[in-house]
Length: 86
Image (tube, rainbow, N blue to C red):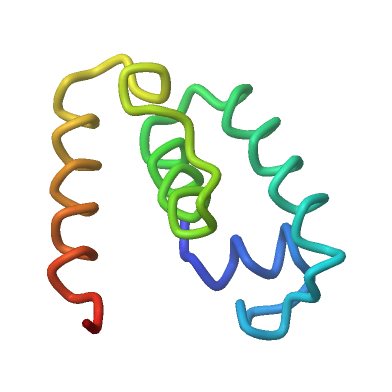
């Protein structure tokens, strides 16, 4: 899944900055429902990633059954933290 496609699907725009604050909770709720229903590991990781960026991702031990997926998520969080402006 491509992040811009996820933004389009859940928020009706490909630009995160264009999402109105009023639309954010509804899109996040739809993502959380889809995250809970999908069994595809790649789709789950993509949804979790966007939820994490938006500050609403479930904890890793709840989100991912496989340790490799949890480790990939930890690596992603570390890379994002290292790239964050100070």
